[in-house]
Length: 285
Image (cartoon, rainbow, N blue to C red; front, side, top):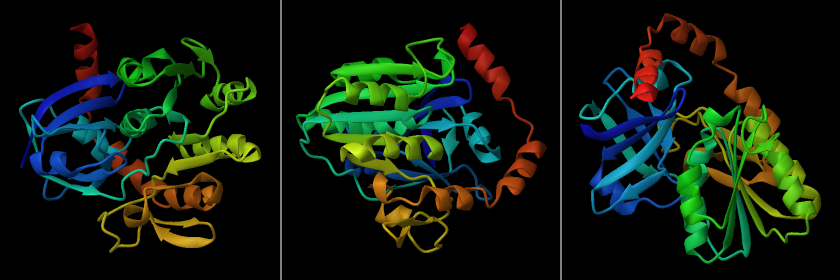
C-alpha cells in the first residue's frame, strides 16, 4: 500500500498527488513513469513521475480524470492509499547540453514535460517552456516552471490567458524570431505532438515526443503499447516512452488509441463520480 501524502486540484479534473514511495524516489529519472492500481480489481494506469523527493521518500504524479479509472484515482484524498505503485519504468529522457531547449506541454502533458525541463536546465541549457490549455484554468505548473526555466510562455485556445492560439503558433513565432533552437520536447495530445513535429521538421530541429499508447503491464510483455517509429515496431513501455518525433507514425498511434473507445465510454457512463463536488470544494477553500 502506498500512502497519499497530499492531493490537490490544479485544474478541472486534474489532480496532483504526492505519494510515499521511497524506493522509486531514490531511483527515478526524468522521463520515467509508474503504473498505478487502486484496488485488486483495478485497471493499471501509467503515469509519468512529475517530481520526487529523496529526503521525504515521495514521488509526485499528476492525473487527468478522463476515463472511469482516472476519475476514481482523483477521488482519493490525502491520508488514503493506492494499492500498487510500480516503477520506475521506461527509459529516462536523454539529457545533454543542447544549447537552447524548448519544452512544450499541452494540457496535462505539461506535467510530463516538467521533469525533463528541469533536467535540461540542470544540464546547462537555456530553457524555454511553452504550456497550453483550452483556457486559463487549464494552464498548469506555470509557477513551478518559472522557477526552473529561463522563459515561460502560457498559451490558451480561447485567448483568456497568455498567447492566443495553440502551442505550435508560439513555437513558430520563437523560431521565426531568429532564436536558434537546438532541441524541442513536446508532450500532449497526439494531434498536438504531430503538429509540433511538422513545425520543426523544415528547420531540422531535433524534436522528441513522449508517446501515450494503450499500456497494460508496462514491462513489454503484453505488447499492447506497440507503435511504429522509423518504420520499425517498438514497445513504448520499454523502448521509450520518448522517441524522435520526425520518425513516429502518429496516424497509426491515433488509430490504436481509439481501439477501445466505445468500451471506455461505456465504463465511464456507468461510473458515479464525486469529482465535481470535490473540485468545487477545493476552489472555494
